[in-house]
Image (cartoon, rainbow, N blue to C red; front, side):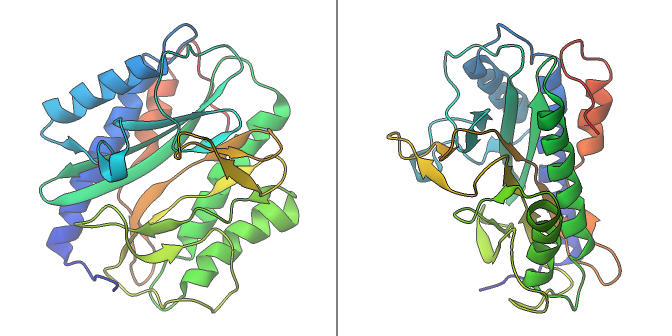
Length: 266
């Protein structure tokens, strides 16, 4: 059942979503070759708890960590581990925060050091597709309009693979609510978007095939052909004229300006 949020509830979701973005921005300072992904997870959990939040993912369905950290061919749901970051990695970090009774959810993919032009374009275009989807998240449109905008740009224009097995979702008192928000679809199809709906739009775009498989840990999803994947996500509120983006990637890009190891790929 789709939940319509009040203006007050949307502001509480904004607080949670901004804490997610602040966590991402803080991590920029620590993302560098030689640092383990488990170290990033520890830093994120401490920061979230110090700011009155609870990690949404930790314990969710048995997930063991605060962050989903997925590298290179990993699409989503990677476990933080003793693996050290190396030059040329791309690092997708998905984070959720529960605060004041509501969740916020956002993801960002970081290029570490010098990456190939093909990978830079993958990140740039995946982020662009997120914003094309958000442009369609207005009252009176349908969920399929969001998916079509992403699919038309990534798949039809640039021939990337759009993951079918994983989709965006509603966000609120629960981390995953109705409706599902696929990154593919047909214009004018799917549930009607109504003012006050809060959804996470999160294109997961592969350099090669759309096909994925899940590792033996039953969480980590990787591309079937081993090619890189990028993932960006915002939590947004549906409005009449223009969606209200509740998370804030600008905080991350401001932090990137000061980083020696992460370059702005836009």
